[in-house]
Length: 608
Ligand code: F6R
Image 1 (cartoon, helix red, strand yellow):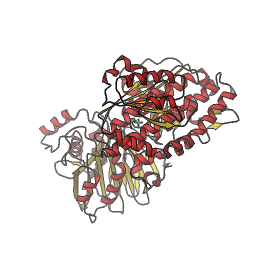
Image 2 (cartoon, rainbow, N blue to C red):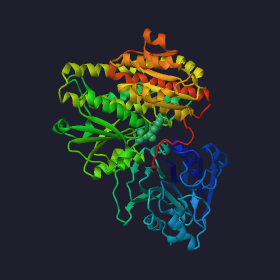
Image 3 (cartoon, helix red, strand yellow):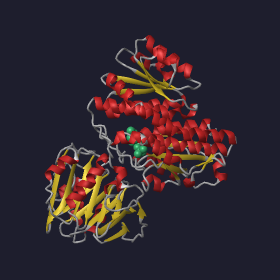
Image 4 (cartoon, rainbow, N blue to C red):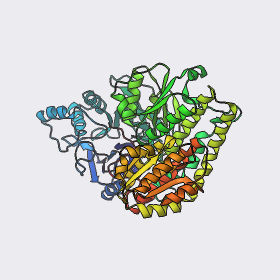
């Protein structure tokens, strides 16, 4: 949440900052701002409510400078307006800061600073940082930043500049990500690599309680006690081109279409037909340790939680290991019991979700081994977990997660296969799973080729106010995911349930204005779900069924049908989720919503 960027170097900083903010916009998009040294010892702050394009209108392309900072906001404290947008400054206008995170003791700090004569001009928690730095500044910005942050309780990724220290920026992090980009006679700081990849691929990830002091040609990393820290320089593997829309009208559309390729990338080099198993190098566990696993617990949030639920189902049914997925936000505060021989997975596309990260840390603190299933290389969960697997789906920019879901479940198919083959799965069955897995990308391509029919259905149904999404077994989490997709990008109210559960309450909602989307694969629960569908039809509910091509029984009952290819019953989540993503996407278009940046949301939820 909130994107921050800093730049010092020979290019016009305002241009670099705005371009970087556009790439960070998925982290928050209610307001934005920049600060540059317009002239010697003079800082110029420009802010605007709304998207970055509103800010851009206010910034002259001629705006001079040699260093600057920028911010795109997802409001936590204070309403959305120009004034509360970052950067914030102290009283004399010489210090400017951008902040991502939450300062928990800001009220107390603000009270003390006000008594000392500081005048606050915004409602934000972040402004206290600027005033604290101003208070402690005696000619050394780095020192002042360290003195300031040592009084702060909460989370921060900050970048600061001072009018009297030209071409220097100080970055500090605790709980909110910050990455340093090393260029040719230029340096960058940003909350994630997307902001700087157009300029450099050489990066250094900061850890909590580290501070970095940069000039165009140097950087020094220290801890809060001034101890210098040697950091490894890492290479970003993503290409700039992967962050462009490449002819698609929006990122969500592009990412939906990228799923066959993303799945292929996720399995490349990880499946062995010779041994009929999967190979996952990053687990950091010996074969003996893998065999000793007695149970698996998966923690995650949102779409990643739904992927974790599919994962838990697979681990139980394929590998016969008791497994459960839990909301990370609940695990953290439940004082979780760490059972012997239990392996934990933290699933997170961004690798920065605060709920998942802090639940992981709590589990690790109690002695658990937690492996990460992440997309963003170098993200905090990826670095701080005890090992893990990258999903390799490439950058996901649209706020609504699509390809990350199918790539995350891909990893769980591989993991289940690996663990099953270490137990009692036969070579023959292992081979079958590999072949089924390999056939999925082509089947998804087939669904994508039929997207126009789904578009027509979306046009027909987008104006209904409420939807139910109903599935069973391994497709129950897919129903939850379908409902989440629809509500987050089209703002249509939707609920996901196990189809069996509707008779325990939700069936009361059924009326001609509440369509139900039934997921009816060719599996052992098919007849049961068909009965549930009949119950809905008997109450005059409209039904859209997602079912296997040629399923006459289902098409005779449903009002509309979306056909998918047949597959092994365990693999339907891949094929069921695609039509739901496409349906939500076209409903959002029909309702004229901002598909990539839906209201009130942000891609990377780095606050609790
Ligand atoms: C929904 C969505 C969110 C995220 C959730 C977790 O489309 O994107 O529900 O899935 O915020 O994010 P990650 O996976 O980054 O931990």
